[in-house]
Amino acid sequence: MIDKELLKRTVAEAISGTDLFVVDIAVNASNDIVVELDSATGVDIDICAAVTRRIEEVFDRDAEDYSLEVGSAGITSDFKVRAQYDKNVGNDVEILTRDGRKLRGVLVEVAPGEPADTDVDFTVEISVKVKEPGAKRPVVKQEALRLNSAECKYVRYDLKF
Image (cartoon, rainbow, N blue to C red):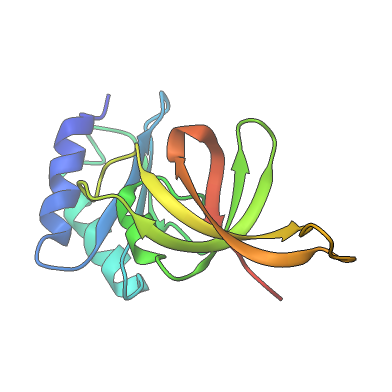
């Protein structure tokens, strides 16, 4: 069985001195390893190859039969750690809350904390139609909404085509 703590330390060593951060490291019962990385400047194939080589130096494939996938979290992936929220401040996001509301807006603020935190407080600015007293038609106003990642099924970058 793959030692997940050793794997985490190995990946941390491989990306030290860069702006990369770990989004997720998953190891299943079949020893399939998936490492998701991200950065404010992007993740290229050379970085993924270097991290792969470092993991293969530490974990002998003959002693441990495993498959390994190292890649970027991707633009359509759900946010999992605070560093992804920080990276996307000012960008459009799509949110599905646990009570079923689908929201779209601009991520305007993220509460301070560690980059690897999974419990994240954030503020999103959404457009809301409001019917003013005496007005014939509703007007669109911006409203700041404070949320916590635990209240959301997902938060992700909002792709607009």
